[in-house]
Amino acid sequence: MIKLSSGKGIEADMKKETFSISEFAKSTGVSVRTLHYYDEKNILKPKRDDHTGHRVYEQEDMIQLHKIMTMKFLGMSLDEIKDYMQANTFDLSFIDTLRLQESKLIKDREQIDIALDAIQRTVYLLENEKEVDHAVLISLLASMQNEKKQEELAKGIIKDDVMKKMFPQTAKEKMIFEQGLLTFYKRVRAHFGKSADDPEVQQMLDDFYRLILEVVGMDSLKELTDIFSLNIEDKENEERIETYIQEIERLVPSPITEEEEAWLEQITTDYVGPLWDEEEGEN
Amino acid sequence: MIKLSSGKGIEADMKKETFSISEFAKSTGVSVRTLHYYDEKNILKPKRDDHTGHRVYEQEDMIQLHKIMTMKFLGMSLDEIKDYMQANTFDLSFIDTLRLQESKLIKDREQIDIALDAIQRTVYLLENEKEVDHAVLISLLASMQNEKKQEELAKGIIKDDVMKKMFPQTAKEKMIFEQGLLTFYKRVRAHFGKSADDPEVQQMLDDFYRLILEVVGMDSLKELTDIFSLNIEDKENEERIETYIQEIERLVPSPITEEEEAWLEQITTDYVGPLWDEEEGEN
DNA sequence: ACTTGCGCCTGACGTAACGTGAGGTGGTAT
DNA sequence: ATACCACCTCACGTTACGTCAGGCGCAAGT
Image 1 (cartoon, rainbow over the protein chains, first blue to last red):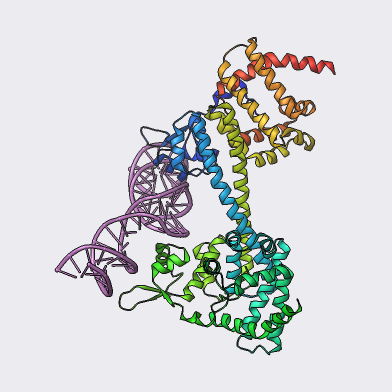
Image 2 (image 1 turned 60 degrees about the vertical axis):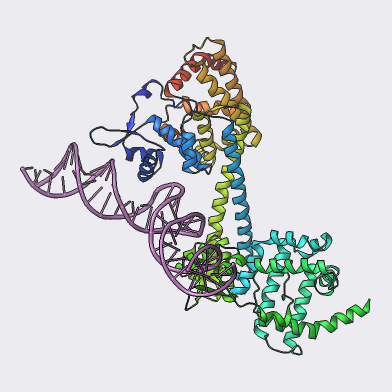
């Protein structure tokens, strides 16, 4: 960082003044092909040896190349760089370019963060499950991918306090919930077609109910069921809910077939419905 | 997140089973051309209408496309994706792929962070200076670009405690230092050629000396000058220092010409040298 | 004098994941 | 009959080079 002079003093001007392309490439760290390319694209055009036609690079070219490398590092394209290669000073307009680059890079980083989070959660799931049906995993991943969009959509129809309860907040909660969803879907596959009397089916629904309760909480769960199934009188609201569901379906594919969905709905009303009424009666 | 069934129940199987390519594109959000491309590359091949040759997409294709989109979101290439498109389950080998993706993404993010930091510091400098010589700015940016490499290189020849002092740590320190360097180089340009007696030159050297002191501290500064200029008896060490300087020069281009460097060295010995001896004598 | 080999040259195709036309076909509305 | 639409295939453009292929000037070895 602190570098005033090279410390060579007077004999420094004995320094070799020119480089062949391979020497230049070696001393700057870029490839010969890249130098050819920059020449071809009029970004860095060195002198030529009149007789052999060989490129002859000088100190000034070294500076120019550093300029190119620096702007590339800032994320600019060679076309953008070319425009700035003519001028000898950077002025205020360069700030705009930098700010643009900045917002691009910030967006990129956000995407990367989301992807990294999804990867880590997926690895965790896979390590515990050994083998996972692709539809289920894709569904989960798609869900992670659009967590933010989903929340925004949900804001339109669900009250804030319920929202806070509804979306698992901590990493641990998310993992527990995802793990639970995985086993649930697995069992749906396994028990598909059985009747609501089957003890395994009952166990499945029971565990799922408990999982939801654990994450969402009783109060919010009731509010949710209110919103989605009971309020049929409010027409305008129903439309909003309809489009909400469609949007979610577009973003997050269902991990189970339509038959399985229908079966689920059937046994849910057969088994859980009465339970609900029971509890409802307790109030 | 919580989505068990679409709530349509029995009439759901009246759903339209097939899509034309434009319908499919619209409902999934990918472009028609992309679907053509996936077909061409055998990644997603829908059925065809025997007579017209038109592509006919079904529900199953929707699932497959979601699979593709998800893996793309994780940062995988279409070639990699193609390999995973055949299987119906993800097993442990998928974990390796994910871990690989993870490390790639982490590297990308680190690069972005470094670039963002450099951009923000540069914008700050430009806002204060209005117009900056390109060589100076490039030098600073190149320096930011390899801060880590520079520190690693320096570790080879400088003691740890001096290291800690030598490299400005906080963002503020860095900005102060860079700002000071900028004005210093500007004045070097402006006063180049004048004698060491010139008051402006003396002011320049004075300010610079004070800047270095402010950032590095007196003790470390002495150690540094010891390392770089006084220790000529230690031959092995001198070689290490020589290669160190060369490496740094390759990474960070000098913002001033060789003539300016020589002039600087001259006036530094003329003016600061005596000062040094004075202080040295105080011990 | 001949050949070998090195370093350089130009030209041209390959890469990833599509975007963007150009030109042709089948089916429908006017 | 004609216009129009949605679809088809073919094919070139994009970015920043990597990777041959064929050819030239010059030096050393035989």
